[in-house]
Length: 105
Image 1 (cartoon, helix red, strand yellow):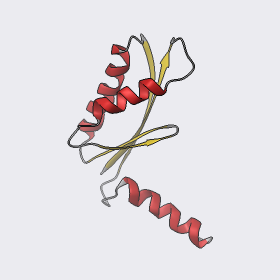
Image 2 (cartoon, rainbow, N blue to C red):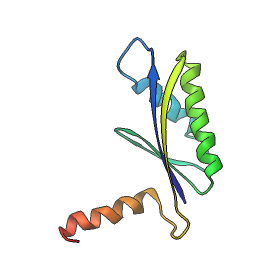
Image 3 (spheres, one colour):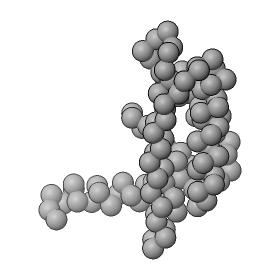
Image 4 (cartoon, rainbow, N blue to C red):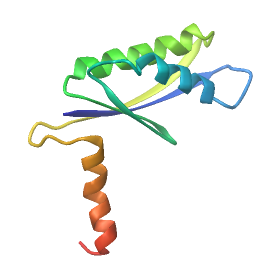
């Protein structure tokens, strides 16, 4: 399973708020068949078993923001590709949460 975190930063807009751009970008990929996503306060986590789908979704996100009139978009894309274990977004979070709940190593 491949997980990626994408963060977009529209540059040169009239406002410091970017929530409308993120909302439209997420809407643009919301019907993707082979991508799951989870919005977080600092980015959006994408999940797929195909890296090509991660790249395709990333391109759609960027293109969507450009179509909104933004001439420059900074993008940070962080990818975690793991072949030894099948993990979901939720199982990765649960792996950390169990240690927080036990208060031990």
